[in-house]
Length: 326
Length: 242
Image (cartoon, rainbow over the protein chains, first blue to last red):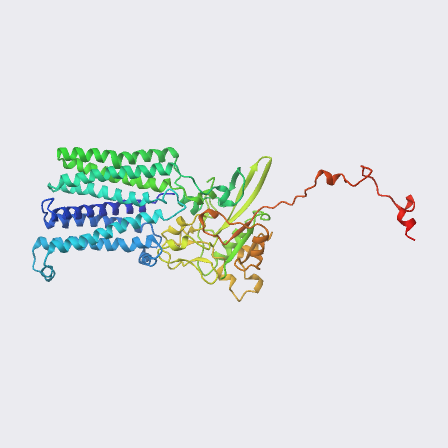
């Protein structure tokens, strides 16, 4: 496949936003259980705002993938059958939940005697309920995003539960790395908690992503040129593709990069998504240096762009069998 | 249930591209809008086509054979491009099984093209929607046309009659008989898409002659010669038949 940058940015940006929101909810859960010191409403409001910024940026990027963005609302129609349609519904729901969650904490922060604030007798419980609703939407969004790719059975590199798992774990890892940066920025006592989880999730992500790399190295492709054109002969050469200057089929499904380039991208993302951020997060936590957390997040995010690019580039669409020589 | 489809005979296709050009001509002139042509007379011509003819060389020299392979939407019975469409623009008609795109609903996300293993869909660079073969749906039901012309443009234009059009669910249709009697097959059967369009394979007419057919075993002389004529005198039958 030829990776589309709109989709690369969409999936990585909303992944960060989703991961950050889960980090906020984890903090609230732990504080409710009194494993962590209670946080101010401002902590959650600003955190939710940052998550929302990433989600909005992701949504913005997605519009560049559409031929007719003005009709995007139509995409909610076929949720019964289409994972893309489900994503289109769940993403705004999740964004709404993040917004409400942030606002509820803000109301608490101001201590205002608004009608809404008065009616909410126990803000701690209310924000937790809204937050849990948001987390449910968040995981539903991870599943929808992953299933868009995993449900295409003849794209054998994608047709695996590992696709959904990787989207989830890598999104969470980048979100927790951002949460560590956030904690470091406001000099919060949550730094050990968030950094610990960021490192843990990055390690888990390393394991699941490596698993999918190994799996994809051993794929037995079900289609070949013989089944594609229905001629049983071991030696078939294509002489004409039916177009002189290429077509949609040659532009959309071929990345036109050398095999060595693809391989180098693999090592680049393994280094930038996993190895460097783990080292930087550990060092940053030791030295309590803000700059190192910035570096960890930025490097991991750029690495994720490479990872997502590789994810698309690696998939071999069976239609390419009809274009042996382009 | 009706399932309209094409049956393409690879045995007689000569790769002339008449189906490609007639398809383009009909569909670019239709009510659904033109099919984009970018740089049609320049260095890298590129445009939207519903149908393309590819050419393959099977075997190794000197035992090679050229196979011309026209490919358009196969109107799968279990079309994988339909359920993935988020807007419902991509749909399969109940009444005749044609898979169509509603150009007014399509948002141009391209997801259906990922979901089609055959690469049958093309994104129109100017109209920004996904396009594909319609089986000339605006032609086959047009009662203003004389009955024999109510067929897809590609079928009418094929000079070798390599393209048949009909209902593949009707066992007595021309297409069903061709599939049944001439070994019609579907492309990439491994994905369970059940393409409605079928292809007829290359067929060779070979005469099998065994050694004993060259030399008659019941010939007592063990050699082939001219048959006896009347001038050789009467046969035994002539002498005894009275």
